[in-house]
Length: 89
Image 1 (cartoon, rainbow, N blue to C red):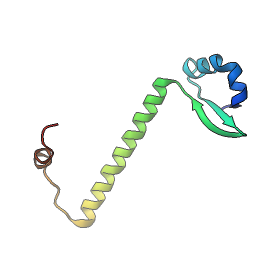
Image 2 (tube, rainbow, N blue to C red):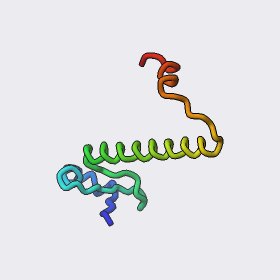
Image 3 (cartoon, rainbow, N blue to C red):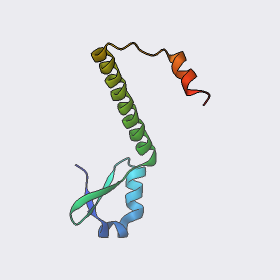
Image 4 (cartoon, helix red, strand yellow):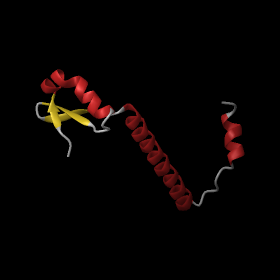
């Protein structure tokens, strides 16, 4: 488990905590009134996590669409028709 620091502690150590998150690739959790409220993470790691979350959401949407097709026995719309309906992007 990672350390959880009170915001009052963070004010005195912000530079070191940013280095810990960025250089050490270790998230730093901040708390207020004893409850975790935010995390300092390396920006590249955050981007990677965001991309993974988006990929997972896309995979779930695709699975839901496949389930819907199976349940309704609907005929899929050909990609060329979809592109034509959407028009130039």
